[in-house]
Length: 111
Image (cartoon, rainbow, N blue to C red):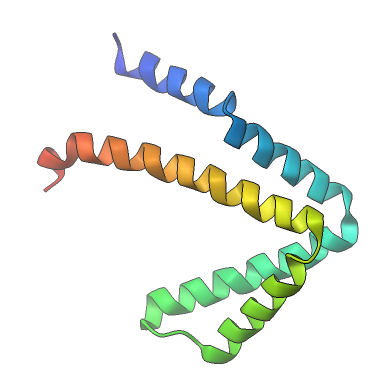
């Protein structure tokens, strides 16, 4: 079997997975709620800034980190946002697991 055929089959199976379907639906629902979408965009921007600063400096900006935590705490009180975060987490775990499996299979040539 051709590796590209296998990769295409994997891509199809990911798109047919429950994790993908739930994440896609949660994202579509979120996009219909303008105010929640704006709050989520603000949170995502803040989360990105916190992660970037952590990678660049090796330290958390405590003020920004606290602000991010507060934003998250407020967001998860909304059922749509909570559903989105849950679906996003499950989908990210699926993708991370697939990446781990592939990484382990080729580790010997990557070291």
